[in-house]
Length: 102
Image 1 (tube, rainbow, N blue to C red):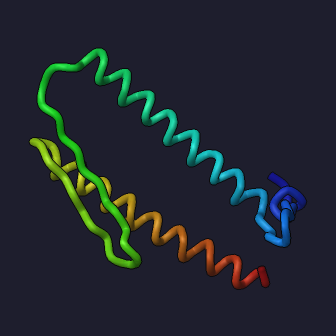
Image 2 (cartoon, rainbow, N blue to C red):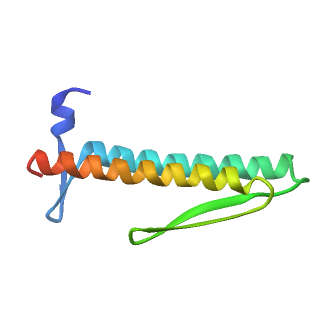
């Protein structure tokens, strides 16, 4: 991407959103959709066996970690790592926005 693409913005109803942020938002929705499809396909073909789940829910700045099943420890650990990475990305992006005057 060139500098012109990075600086292009979408203005709608007085709210300015960078095109890169919008692209990441759409990319996130695509990843969620693909993940759901993969889980459904795996459930259809590998329906028998044990089931594990885990997740992280943010309530303000406090993470709530949940998990159950034989592989829950690994899943919860992965969820916590993703949560920490998302907080770091948020801090980096907000610092970039503040430094660019946005």
